[in-house]
Image 1 (cartoon, rainbow, N blue to C red):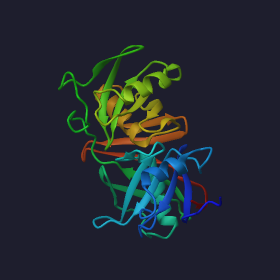
Image 2: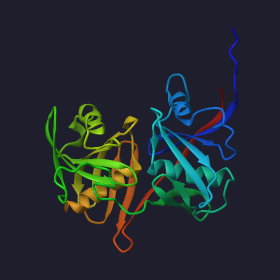
Image 3: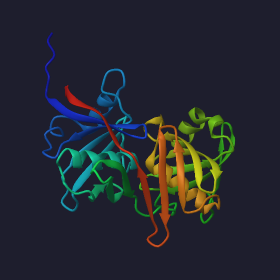
Image 4: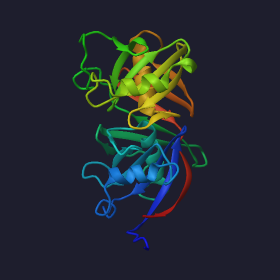
Length: 289
């Protein structure tokens, strides 16, 4: 029996320090009328039978901002925010001609996020700086069922022993763990255990952090809905917030991830977190579904 194809979808494959995404323009909402975004994310992000990616970024029109960004993990779950994804979206929107603004306002489930393209004197985009907004430390808003509200850290019992975490939200929840040797961290065991821990009612991302100095961190991550990835922008921001609050670093930190480096700054005057890093096009094409 011949297969019936419903539509062709144009896409761009992008990456931000190894965190890779499929970016699709659905401002006319034609795709949504044919496919569930959740189902589409699972299908397209499959690395054997699809395009392959950590997540799917859907560009939509917004009534209050320049654009709306809907973010889906590779398992089909929707994410409130993705720092690396926002950088990719900003470059995509500019180079695709959707906007001619080097600085735009993007509507996300985590609120309005403002990325800025950083160009050299020849107009070439080198990096993207994103105003990630204010870190959220209130357990109710993270959300996190803190056993001891008012304390900075919490000890959680795991199959591998007691683990101390710092809970932070950057529009999505994070559990930050400091370790002396991040390369030896049991990410595959602790990551999924903590991601689905009942203390995190909306699940959580998990960051494993080694402090190299008061200006540098080394990080590995287990992402909610995606597993081990090469990078997580909101995770890097959450890690820096946790490091500063625990007295381990200053307010400007270079975070080394498996996919590359991010510069994170906590501006205490505005209480906003600023993240700077690259965003690149891998390839573009059309897929028939």
